[in-house]
Amino acid sequence: MQSVNLTRHFLIAMPAMTDPHFAKTLTFICEHNGQGALGVVVNRPIDLTLHALLEQIEISPADESCRHTTVHYGGPVQTDRGFVLHAPAGAWKSTLTVDEHIGLTTSKDVLQAAARGVGPPRLLVTLGYAGWAAGQLEQELAQNAWLTVNADERILFETPAEQRYEAGLKLLGIDLAMLSDAAGHA
Image (cartoon, rainbow, N blue to C red; front, side):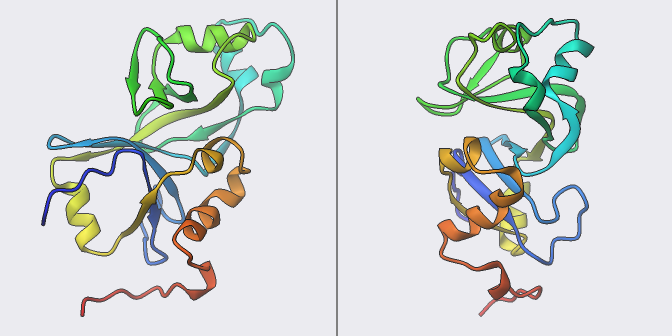
């Protein structure tokens, strides 16, 4: 398969995806290169608020704004670790710069800033991430496990989580009702 860089793309799980970690998910790819790929699932909120997470890691929120921000399941790898997808990318201690607008940070400083009300204005917090070894994602694409499309920041940060999967499909002009559970090659 020809090399492709899916950094800053959405992976949209096909309806036939049976892996419980990825069925009906929209995943944002933060990095894709010859060593593999890293992304976060962006449409699976969990029963945890940012306020509660901050309290668990002994950060005191300055106000109640974090109380309504939901933490998401980001993927099956390192589910005990937080990953903060945010815009702008900024200059945090441990940030993977996706592009000039978006960063993925794993250091506490971004959460401390968010708790004080001075963090990135747009953020999505996940526990865990999705990772693929070299060539693995390309193989899954060849098996029709995923659709891909350039990511839209509005879907990441403005669209409610329960609407993100279908919003990703709409970027391709696809209605969920029109997708088949079967895939094939011509």
